[in-house]
Length: 297
Length: 229
Image (cartoon, rainbow over all chains, first blue to last red; front, top):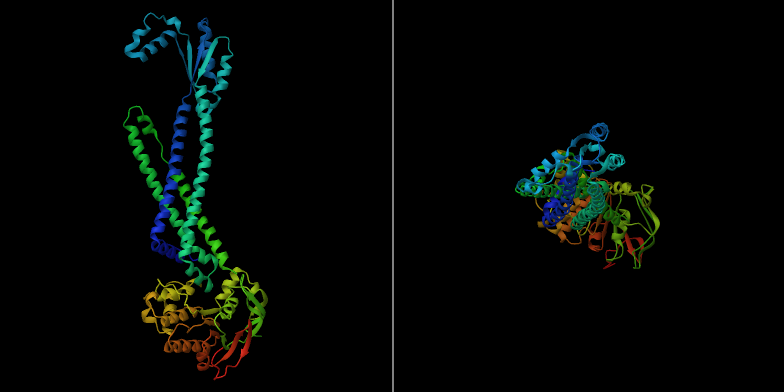
């Protein structure tokens, strides 16, 4: 395969049929932009969920009649548990104080309440790696006589897990759909190029060019179209991401999301670029092979 | 052993009457042959069979004793490099320059850089177009296009040269110039087959003649008085 010849012919073909080439590049850009943005949104959902899950808090509500000694023993036991990063005992008066603080100007609503209306609570934080075993931890302490209830974001955690499963399933389907479209666009581009260069292929065939030689310029053309589409799509995604982050940062409520949003790591971008180029070249390869087979007796 | 030998070849195209039926011929190395017959008789089909652009329905075609119909894809490409061929419709890339067209087979053969340029120039000198090498083929006359086509056919310095109606679209003076070039190629040792239905050409540049008539190939001697095929 003559790469230099393939490259120069591919560039010339792209420039000669620039309207068709531009059209194909823009279609690929659209495909890849949509795919990239979906992946980016998904990556950010995972990112923020992981932050949230890393701070999973569990509250162990103690029975009112529990003695001070039992409270201390239980607190020590909780602290020593391997899933637990930290644990603190919240006394009823401290809880009331915190509640009043949260109510701010409305704290007068609590006047008349005595601190013994609230139970003792052990608030604990679970290690990130054990975040999915919170249920196990809750079950272990719920069984204690001194514990009235263990509360944690169980339902929310399950919802997050279900959401991930659905998004992942849909994501794979979506990615497959985009990849098929990608293949079809490149094949279409190659077929148009083959059509406009059919005479050249016939001449090459007549003068004894091998299949590899004839294929080279078309494969390079597919790779170049793919590369252009990828770079343009990357630009579009980067710009959209920038505008979105700026928009989120302007609102106090969404500012932390804006500040914490992630973009594609370089290694992932490199892999995606490699994948796009391979797919571009491979799609062209298959299309041109079909035509070459037709030319042979 | 003949250089080219066709034995009992038949060829038909889908949905059409056979073009050739049980036809045989032999061509020795270094010979000059005409292949003649009326339009549609099957002259181009013979070239296509010899170039492996088509396969015979029956029979065998051999080059240097080797049955070429059995060659695999890669060897088919290598087989075509042994043959220089020109066509009535030139088969040139109109939007490319003269030198780009002539360089195509050389690039296929792996030449590049100064060597490629030098060889292209030599080939264009042989046909008298060296000083016009940068011109696009699109603006050339039919005769000039045929000269470019001949220069391209000579790229691999082929031992076998096929010309399919090389003077079909040319005026007499250009036709004679093209035929002089083809004769020169023959004098240098190539085996040449020229397909033509122009009896005047055959009478002017005399050589052995194969006639395709009634789907068969016969060797004939055309009389000076014969008005048509």
